[in-house]
Image (cartoon, rainbow, N blue to C red):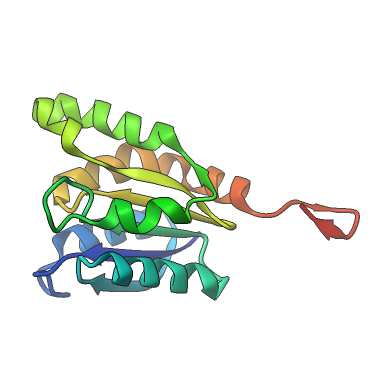
Length: 162
């Protein structure tokens, strides 16, 4: 799969983006290609703009974001992307919070991790902590990425797509 990574942060740089590096490591180890990686300030318009631009490219199977999914004043990823989703994958957030509960306890309920499809592109949004990214990549995203991306693609039936 061809993937893009978006780190949502007001403070991280390419050198300090441990979560983006963790995501990249998991994707490449599984044989996927990272075709774009960027850091975007935690501003809803900028996050939305980045996701829309990556989806519009047409050559990306999945966009994976990290950061901005909590409830702090500057956490805006959920607001930026939730209205973009054509189809939500509610189980992603539910399972992520369940697995997180086993690691961090009740604080897991504060996560607004979300996933779905935007057109024919899969979108996964998870917290910015490296441990959270590792958990989501190992237990949820990597095992299902190919399947999710395949289901998101248009089906061609008798010369037309549906």
